[in-house]
Image (spheres, rainbow, N blue to C red):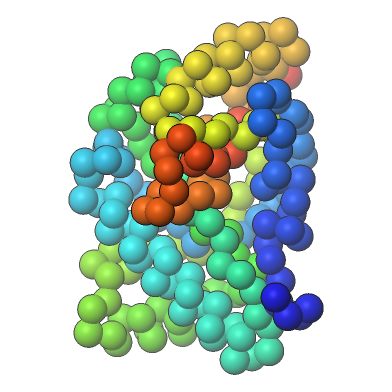
Length: 207
């Protein structure tokens, strides 16, 4: 990789490389993202796939526009914020009750003008994503958070989340302070499900 090509996962290594098998606390600064909101089972909802397509189409268009201006970087992995009226639905994997915001991290120099221009470039293509107009630029400040690395299928996250919710947080006098956050470090289209690497993060505050 050229020395002047920024890898956001390396720049924020402590946020994207937690240990496996134990929880650690991190302080997450304000970060910029492209985002799409939706709800429902990610395995069966067409809106989920449409959102992923739109996010990455625009993310790569923004990257190439930035590169033309002299600042190149690696497009980040897919991330997701997950909420539900009952947090227990995550442990029980009741996916139809979930609401989600899909994210792709952006460098801090990517401003609204660059995103708007890149959106028009993507819109002009014959096969423009159907969810393109749902993509928005946003920022997120999670602050104090607890995270770990999960290796394996997504549906095996339940016991890890149960340990976080029912053991770690109460034992450390903490409670929820924002949506459950997942970072998908592996390409689900190519990776063996047993080797999928996912950062599980929960913003927290004193109970």
